[in-house]
Amino acid sequence: MSWSLHLLGVGNASAAARLGAASAVLEQDGAPRLMIDCGQEALDAYRVAYGRLPEALFITHVHMDHVAGLERLFYAAYFDPALRGRVRLYVPAPVVPHLQRRLADYPEPLAEGGANFWDAFQLVPVSEAFWHAGWRFEVFPVRHHRPDTAFGLRLPGSFVWTGDTRPIPEVLAVVADAGERVFHDCGLHGNPSHAGLDELEREYPPELLSRCVLYHYASVADGEAMRARGRCVARAGERFELRGPGAERVTAPPA
Image 1: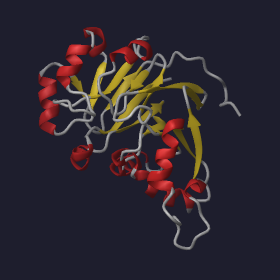
Image 2 (image 1 turned 120 degrees about the vertical axis):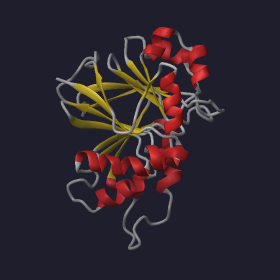
Image 3 (image 1 turned 180 degrees about the vertical axis):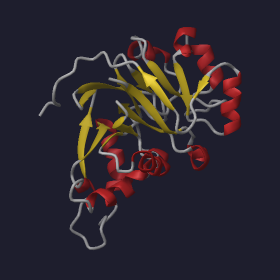
């Protein structure tokens, strides 16, 4: 059994048109299992890569470069009898009200009426963990704007995805303690919402930095500059092989 993480896009909000909106797909034996975030560009990239719509997604937070594709996914799924109400949307419980206000509160998603935004999805609010495809994923808070508005994802023993965040050494000491590959928000220069390379090099131990794959940067030039400093920097469309998860597996998701 092989595992990989496919980076659909690696850019920040201003670079999404050139580098793709930051998003990834967990693949098992080459098949997509879980999409992480769904910006507008990410949904297009998913369809190009897999020839179909995603059937399971985890949402880290509700900035539009991470959720704008959900509106188009609503229409595509709602009018497909095979998908309506079956697209699983795993959302950290504190994020659900923000997502509701961002997308679901708009009056009448269909001009004809008679439809709710959530009719296209199977919303699964999550707190510390959730089961998907027989595997237990863990969820943890990160530092991006206000507390409890942005979260990361871990498949124990396999990978950690930070989502948008400032440096979080105290968190990764716990959630990346089993040798996981860490996919980390990082630009050449940090700001009050996002980590910069200087900050990661100052705050993270060398062993952790050696496991980091950096994404969510501002330009091709910035990515090359970070590579020149010896860092692993993802490119849009790149796949990274992962170790198999170490979490206990069940033969079917809990009912």
